[in-house]
Image (cartoon, rainbow, N blue to C red; front, side):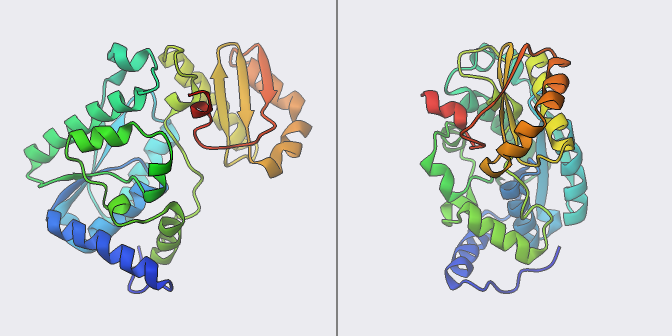
Length: 275
């Protein structure tokens, strides 16, 4: 990755320095890594600021993590030049998570952060950090409560870095994730109150792979039991409609009875609209 010596926006430069100052204060850290835009930038910034020996990347592996994301995490850590540890999490064994309440993410993050805190202690790292950004405070994010409860820091959020700030800085650093579409965990595709199962997560993963292989880089397949609700960006709805027969064939082969296209288009966290 390219060192990020300067930023064209003075305000962004100040935010980046604030994030670096937090990392320096922490001294050494385990980064909760998911291969997404935010955590990849945080990992690269931590390595640039502290050096690779004082940073450890850790990714939680479970049925809610898409396999392609897991593989990309391995490659990104290699490119950044930092060790990656895969932590097997067992949130599916927790009834409070599997029942899929509105605060599902709290239970998932609580388990992950507890395991990362233990890992940090075992490996001699002083802290655990996660990649929440300033925009996350404007949405329903119970995972932030878990980070506060377990003293997991969010340097990007604390420094006031927005998603766009992080994309801009990632591009300046030469990170391949600077324009990567948002990618939440697979459990976010299942309506609150509907039980989460390995079978549902696998079906969603395969369905979204099918759409991505058709060129829909940004997409969601929301799993409403027998119905698959497809979200693609508004500008690609017409193209998706033109592929209706192919989409129906692909998704019914995975076990869905009905396949529908959401005319509102893609939006992150659309399941939160029911809250």
